[in-house]
Image (cartoon, rainbow, N blue to C red; front, side):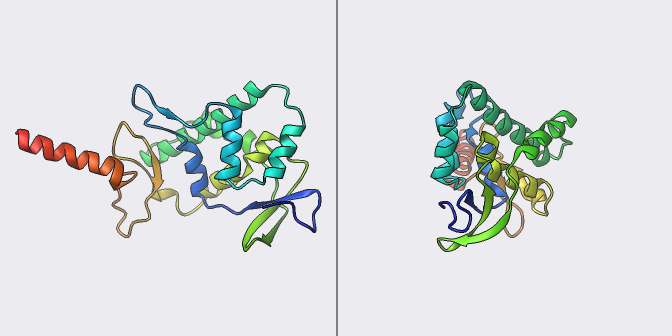
Length: 205
């Protein structure tokens, strides 16, 4: 979504579900393998994710770039640190463990830097949140992730958070199945691998 007509110095970010922050945490996967798959190789990759997955307006990203970032490496490290922080919090929940106190403490400054949602507006056939154009910082661009994380951690769907049963995969997901029995990130990936593994060892026995 572009800038709103009524708020020429504001941006409209599409409303996202609680699952967005899980998608962000999952940008690194196959975590328990020798060569995990990494989506983010640079700050440009993070900004592309913000645009293509989180729906942050291109004009807002352009405004961020125009400010002249002094330390791109530090900004990139901060984005990755947020991702890993959310992953640890979510993994603890999925495993039925208590989160680390220092992780909970570390999340607060990120939430404090998220852009305040000024108003709910509608454009291009969907709803979005109006944010002040002054929040064109990295934290501002990651605001949809932070809003999503706050809503998931404090909301009723947190108990549905699970980790793929493939120990090498470590993918996180919300189990919305009718009986809450989903085990795999997808049957076409880890589910079929497990099925083939059982079949092979069954024949070998």
